[in-house]
Length: 314
Image (cartoon, rainbow, N blue to C red; front, side, top):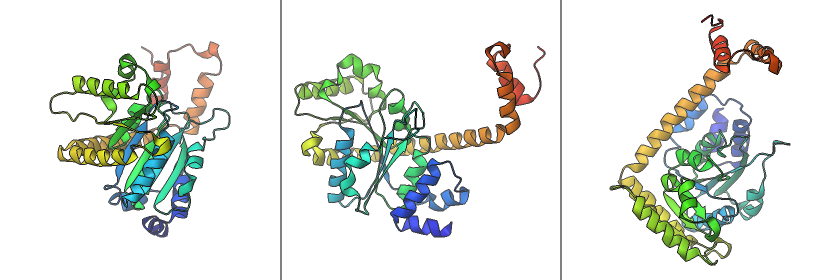
């Protein structure tokens, strides 16, 4: 294990791939492994990028990586793809689009399946982020499928959430329905060469200004056309400035502490579930639900029986 940790610290991408595969497959790396790399995971900037399908997120990330490299920043990307309900395999489109960085040891890109989690952010993505941070990556990007609860899930896992929209993204009602105003620290209007981009940017700024609370940092809005690399340098500079501003206001500390507590709760819940679901209890659940006719008690009652081992006579 010490040799593996040493290889990760030295930015060995083969070792990174091996460890990440273990995390994806649910193989235990042990508490000692995570404790050993913990001090190396604190400095990386974690950015979440979400938004509707077709917003050009992957193209945007592709160009953003280039600007990061120009600014002497190494990058790790965790692209969480929807998992096929038939094969369980994840689409690897992002890696295909970003293959120009394949031989660059300052960039590591990994596609992960969401494994059926509706939130979009794979359960192990944060552990993968820690490993990438331990390898020395300065900026870690989590790209999600950006549907439903996904935006809220990614917001809990990162320092800054970027929501990418396009001129066709809709009106004020759609923005408010999506709850994007609540969770985003940064907005990008991509494909800004299209009609309506200026109107959407102004609409966003008006909404953000109206709904921003006193003392709250108002999210910036940046226009880009990633397909031709336009606005990406401005995005990088504004994002870094915004990160520093959030740090100065102690907002980042609050987010990191909240994230840390949430991860502890998740780890405890998973461990308790793992211990609880023995072969006998799984068999009891299967036997008690063998057919629709056999379900004579409420799920709450059956859960109590499984938890306590005693039937509720009341």
